[in-house]
Every structure is written in C-alpha cells, then in structure tokens.
Amino acid sequence: MVVSVPPQAVLANCTGVFRLPGGTISFQTTAAPGPVPKQLAVTGGTGSYDNAGGDGTLTEFPNNTGTLTLHVLSLVARGG
Image: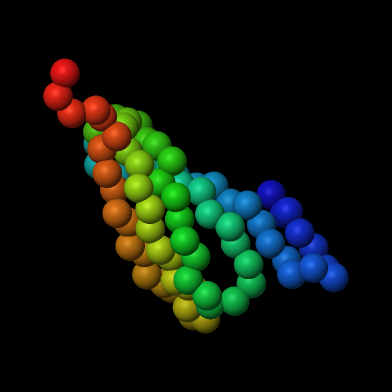
C-alpha cells in the first residue's frame, strides 16, 4: 500500500510471508526507493512459528539480490 507520493518521498507499507519448513513467518515494513536497509517487524506466523515475533533487516542490492537477517522470538509467556 502506497502511503506517500511526490512531492513527498515515495513510501509504501509492505507486508510479506516467508515460507519455511514447519510453517510461515509474517512481517511488515515500510519501503522506499533506494538501497537503504529496511527494518522489518516480525508480526506472527503459523505452524512451528505461530507465536513468532521479533525484528529484522533487509538490504537490497542493485542486481536484484540482497541480505535478510531475522531475529525471531517466541512470544509465549514463560512459567505459570
């Protein structure tokens, strides 16, 4: 979803899903043109990741490749 257009800087709200063995991890981020690293929020998941939360960074390179680092936490309360 585009949330800002010229004359303001172009900015979009993006959501996505990573499919992994055992389930999925969903994320949300803002996206703007350029190679600036994008900060991700891990917003949930399914299967083995149904209580997932955390954050991450996506860096895109001009050759349509990039790096992704996720810090995934379990949001299940400990103890009783």
